[in-house]
Image 1 (cartoon, one colour):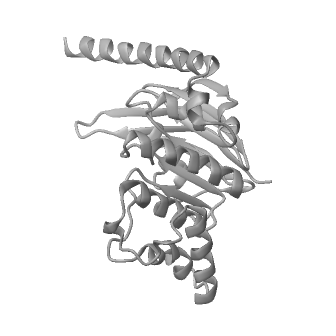
Image 2: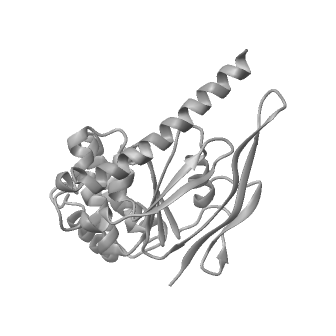
Length: 269
């Protein structure tokens, strides 16, 4: 089984005024194949920077990222990204969007059709393959984005606030879909979110990051994602165990936000 290894990753950005900003400091962790990690923390804690380094969109200042025995340099087909906005091709149909990756890899047309048909079924869009993207709701577009990512068969799926733009009801339905896809595909998933409730519900593992320089402040191993595969999400989120953990993490993040505000005010004085 392949394992994602993030080893001592740090990131320093240059600023226009000639200064620097330390976005990440010595972040290290391992993820076994098939684990689902949720990452949250206050604004400016380096969540998206870390995800973009793993994706290969950014090169870290120091440290390394490996998938199994392979050290990762730049983006690659072993990692797929799902963004907050679907980033879909508006001029293509749903089926054409999903099949784009396999087509670029030279997959035969009959095999592409099977991949697309299977994924349309998986994400509940079997009757929408011929539709234009603009004809779909936001939630349906994110289903297409998930299917397009899966069509490339990556080892690791990276999600940057993939449900953040959806209304509350659609977001909850999509959370259940993410859990379903996680269990059915066996993919390793890393999900960035600002929602404590979402991170608790989806994260088999959960990291709370501290702000600048970004680092992992607290780690949790949680039972709620596994429970969400068979139990009603509302019952899970209303349970005393879920509420207690939610309040614990909310208090932790609130304290960090207060510290950030205090530091900013001190700098401005």
